View 1 (cartoon, helix red, strand yellow):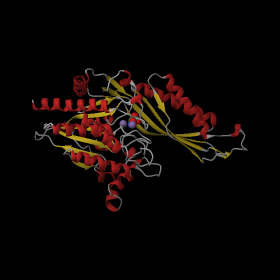
View 2 (tube, helix red, strand yellow):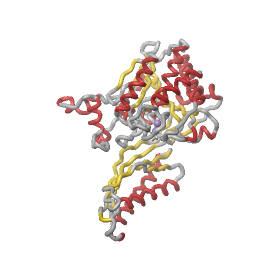
View 3 (tube, protein in one colour):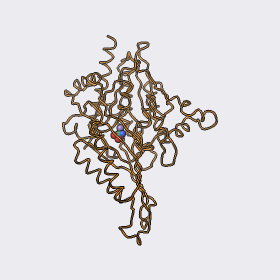
Length: 421
Ligand code: HGY
Ligand code: MN
Ligand code: MN
């Protein structure tokens, strides 16, 4: 299917040029870039014969009815938002590949007996509000009240952003608040076959094992926080070191302490990805420092005990330096096992196409974490060069994309054959 792979590559390239930040790829929740991405991918869905809509959380949904009336629905998808200065594969691959696979089946005259929904989630990375999975949480009716209260850098809450997106900005509709947004699960679990997500591995395993694709056994759990350290701003030239309550120095000691805890704990990863300092002048001792914290592990018990140690470290530093510190948990997801049955089906297609089906754990989070609350989940990983991701040089080769496409087509054809009985 070389033409199909070429088509997929050109769609990924085109989508990869839609950004909110000229010069680098960034698309965040409900942004103008996300609106344009939904339009482009919506056109691809329509060209493949799917009916297209956008739900109240900004998720793009393409639906193809099955040949069998009343048949269940198979969900295929991933996210269309990106991190800042992103690569073009993380997310979009899992939305565009199923579209190309469905078009290939139609070219072969194959009519699937079950319905298919291709999902382009509006927010998985958590860049704008610090909490990931807003799209799939909206799709599964699991947006939490605390999440709706989170505010972005401009002080806009998730609820306000959703109300604006849905034009519920005045009078009765605004007062109706959340209920006017119909944030209920899109499907009853009993109407679903499962959810399959194709995603680049974002790690080194498939490359090391010289494999184009693999299946995922589990997705690591993750906790995300926003921490604010508050000390005392002051004159950089006249305040003796012993009299300072330097918020940034405290945060820095904490950040290197967290790194040391993670290095000592096998399989634990901890990251501080964003930091702001106030008032932010070269000759002023920082009075406040705010940063994120992202902690993950395949085992929830290990992640939780590491968080206890990290909490104790923060307390020691705050007391020693006379700082206040405020923790805000912005996200917490336990580790999720993929469905053994659905993954075995997917592995059978990997085996048929590649001759070997390796199973690996995902250190990265995926919409499959949230979708697993609604329906069985399986994931197909695609090798990416040097395991690099969340970086503009993220890359999956056309050859590996062609293998992934053949796996998806094989999976759909086998499922259809079983369905027809
Ligand atoms: O952060 C992650 O693990 C994913 O890329 N959202
Ligand atoms: Mn990502
Ligand atoms: Mn992703």
